[in-house]
Length: 191
Image (cartoon, rainbow, N blue to C red; front, side):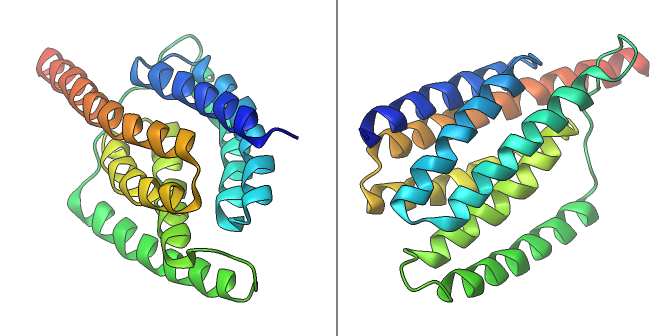
């Protein structure tokens, strides 16, 4: 099997997903689902098991996101902001989860770059759940997870994914700004 082509196809699908999320397009969840299915195969082949599990989680979240963004009787799910206490708990929980994932990965003899894999996985899990709920700050979590993932993928020689995640950082910054402006405009309109 030509893994480079599979990687390129998965990267293209994931890029489409992220751009569609930036513009709050529900169809993006379908792109994410398919690209994540390709990612499961790629990461199992590359022996980064937390990333493979994360891709399987993305598939489930693709279905959940599709449902969540479409279940409001024709009304769009609104962007929300969460308080600092919420994020303090999420960050502590994310670090604990990263440590637990790292520990589990160390039990696998052929797992590679377990600290990076654990951190990127833990914070991607949190960011995906927040994205499905349209929590503004999900994009900041994506920035942190994606910066670590760039290093992980470069070390693995997965250059399509390293490039994709570099683009993700830029898109996440753009989305954080765009969603923030939309939320502020909505808050001003309701005041």
